[in-house]
Image 1 (cartoon, chains in turn green, red):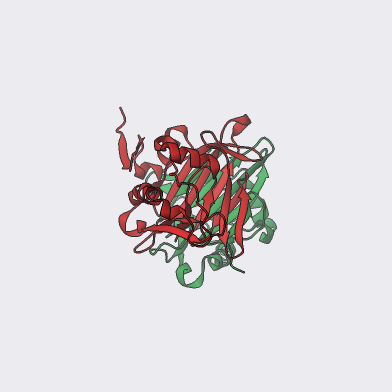
Image 2 (cartoon, each protein chain N blue to C red):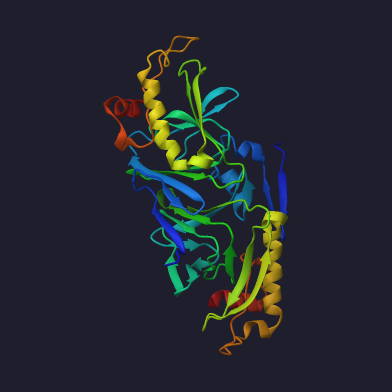
Length: 186
Length: 218
């Protein structure tokens, strides 16, 4: 049967990307009294938090390194624009990430690790998401996150000697104990 | 004084004090200073955004046009949907859709349209978004009319927004509605003989009396 549309419950934790036509949507919810995701971006002045609002639609432009605290513990750089949505109610805060990966210029997803103190780049990797798939990037990112965590030297800043916290992937259900603890912290 | 940026979309002038480069920095598009510049549609980066304030509760109500439903036209006929809060709905490309009392034609888009509505804080008006990828090359959209009794296609006008840009949408909409309404033959179904109501544009400010009457009907 021909599909006319796709419906996704905003805020329902599915632990997976929803593919809806030209868009990929990750959505979930947290108690408003808990750890609400905050958008951070790398700009000329360094790692900058985006001013949080109870209701927001923020566009992370293609090529901008960004991270969402408590959602993924590394910096992502995409060739596609990403929309971050937040809707706060007294009890529950719903969030969503909408990735648009069908632009002609879309080819790569990248992940980066920066020193949490001086922001120096510690490691950067590129993934051929245009060919291998967007969802696969997030699977591979978890592999790279764990490789980074397993190498004690990789997480020590060569400039200021700060130690990188344990990184974690997007899907909380796949966290090990150390990743789960780190997700709660940053 | 901040510099004002203005753009003309057919008869609607929109203004924003915030340049596009800044919108892609740390600006929340729901900020009251920003949202007005997206009340029609605006290109930003790789996408086009339409953002409006709406009463969003268990149903969604346009302050000017009232409550409406979305209707999709598929192989099985008409499918009616309510606008509801916290539901991401993506209208897939190629599906004719019409929003009652909001726009008086069937919109057929090559691009998928992502729709989402949030309630506002403490009973305030909420937010209604449409996000769609910017069309490229020969990609575009159509304004079409089908007989409301037997669903025979009556009239269609296609525009190539990939080539001509977003401004072509509002000009194309007005031209398509004028063209459809200009001749009763367009509205008279060649299959069943039913005389269909007039079409009307999304913006009600320039409705003719016939268009205003049609807006109340469908």
